Image (tube, rainbow, N blue to C red; front, side):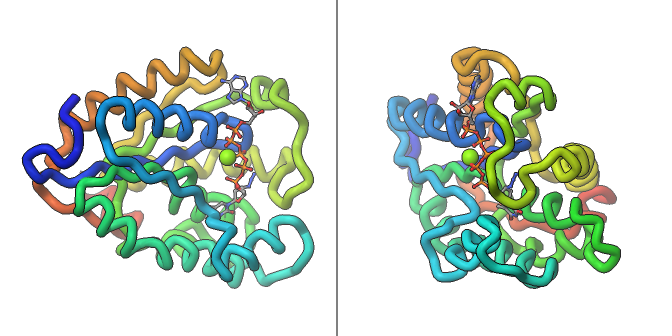
Length: 229
Ligand code: Z5A
Ligand code: MG
């Protein structure tokens, strides 16, 4: 695998998505080590980034310590990505690969899963348009039964059966519509090492395939993603 920096190429932008307890953060950690050992400079970001002032408002909302209108919290999640967008772009441009744990796809589907009549999936996607488009999105798929074996729901908002069922369906819809995105579904219900092995194979192929002399693209509207394909 050709490490970043070689021939002045940019880094790659990889997003890891999936349902609750699919193992996203565990696999991001694995992926970071895998890329570092392969000679890459790597940054790991997770959304929500609860450290910023916007992130602190999100954290309080998720813990049930504050109440916010559905649209307002949705826009805060998006703003939390926008506040890091420039630094992601400049890191990637200077040869650092960036791994992101949850991104715009989670942003759109969790809000749309609330089934608020004035918060459609299209509406939820709109503020994401123009953010850096990942070179690859790994979608960690897990059945409700396998997820349940990893412990019960935690105490945060959205950690309940009704939300998770809707979120599962909406992830399918958003990936069908955003066909520009290179999405690879990984069966995450298997032992950690088996999942990691699949991920390293997919990443190695992605790094070879991506044209790292061209800049990152931007996320487009959901419908334009479908029409272009
Ligand atoms: N949200 C939103 O509404 N809008 C947005 O724009 C964004 C997010 C970005 C908090 O997210 C909530 O915010 C989330 C979506 C919403 N709500 N829900 N549900 P978060 O990312 O901060 O949530 P988290 O705390 O990281 O939980 P998680 O993502 O569900 O977990 P995970 O990262 O997928 O799993 P993990 O922490 O790696 O592993 C979970 C456990 O399973 C742990 O004990 C592991 O050791 C174990 N594990 C992992 N993999 C395996 C395998 N393969 N076998 C056995 N056990 C395993
Ligand atoms: Mg996580």
